[in-house]
Length: 256
Image (cartoon, rainbow, N blue to C red; front, side):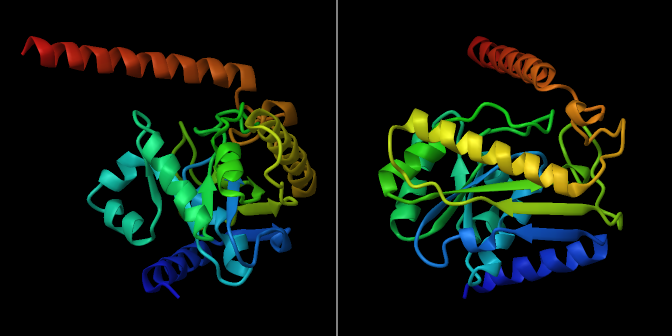
């Protein structure tokens, strides 16, 4: 039992109750009751990690150590909590340390949560996966646990205001069968993408009719979300703009 983690979970459950969130969780038995696991999660919203830990908690009250961007740890409010929960900071300028930390956690029998897409998918379709989850699994010997969340983007996602009031959103969480760490990283990543794609379609079908034109519904299902191709273009433009601003700041610093 970890008092801080337990307290945070209790607080989260009270918040979900106040929000009227309706959770449907399937495949809990696919989360390891003991031993390590790479919890690979699709990324549709800012609060995905709070929901992705539910199957592990239901499976023997286990805790997941999530990999999150370093800026969250640098914040004076969220930083102390993230460190107390033993989550793993990711410095995108130097990812080697976070990778080593994650592998160390796995070798100690922990569950490590990671987003193979790296960033939120504006299209709510699966983006191309990075190979980090597969490499962690291969190095540590831990299975990959494909975990898909659907509906959480209604609460808070990129480019849209958060809705933390009592809206009664339905959130589905599905855990697919574990993938053993065999083969090379590219092949394992492809298997993971295939597994999560199938689970995503399964959850979307089970969710029922999606309201047409809604921002959180993929274009494929009649929503107003951008297509995957459009979302990729938007992401590329955003990254280019960030790089340009960073270059300007660095140039200003050197001139000063």
